Length: 408
Image (cartoon, rainbow, N blue to C red; front, side, top):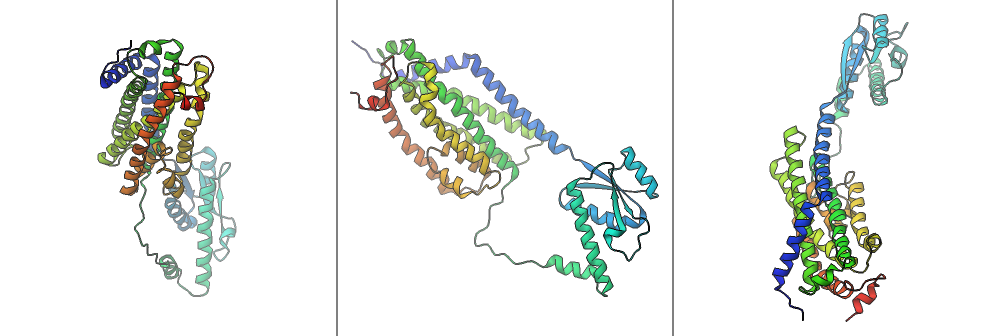
């Protein structure tokens, strides 16, 4: 005769065992360490990238000064830093270019007249090749110089005309104020989605693998003599989920601290903390939703080699959401496609935290997304519990999903 203990006591017993086993697991410790190294390493790399500014040194001879100054201003407008250095003559400038002291020399062509066209008057001397962006910038400066020369020849004032042209613009009146996306918040949102994706892939599949391991070793038969199938499934999900939550919280906090200490993360603490909190919330919702499904699917097979095949259909929703998020959001943070998919429970655990980290998500969308997932979880618990109960004690060949649902 089976003697079953209280529901919470049984769940707590299984969960405690899972937490103890996972925390002592070398694989868990290594994966946590790797994630921490990656997040800190990413922060350091971003610091080095942001701290390294490439400066291009341009030499010029006296008559080309005005054009060189215009080139410097045009380059600055596109984020390029030009340092100007006057050289005594063309020969000295060419020598400095050859020695590597100058990246380029802006000079006047031999025999050029002041009335000649710009392309016939100036030239750029480089050692091998010129930066395409800077070359295009200089071409625009030359075009403007040519236009100024034509205006002067017709008796006009180039300064006044350029001022009129520069201020000419259409007046755009938005009905709603557009959301301005902070690049750092965009990066935090993407990182949050990546962490949740990795956690669901690692910890979610660990639930299915744990079910198969107990089923193969016949331990499940001993456990089910004392507790009910749904209690065993719930305890396993909660235990592995708690360990995964600890991992995510640790990575999130270390990432924010590293970002603040290195100066890479300059957004407010409240904004960064909000992203970490949403990361934890959506990890919990996503893990609970998917892990109970993985537990049921794991009960259908009796060999570890078959786990991947049986959980792949469910994992595809996680993968698709992740791929869409990292491929669409960086170029289009307000994508309508991502907005719609982030409200669908299967895609929400990866897409919604990305959007929330970026910002600009209406409150009703965030609430609706959470509510839909929470509404789906009880139905998944009932369905998965039925599959798990009817399949976990059946060893040998893979149990068909239809048979697990119909079994008494």
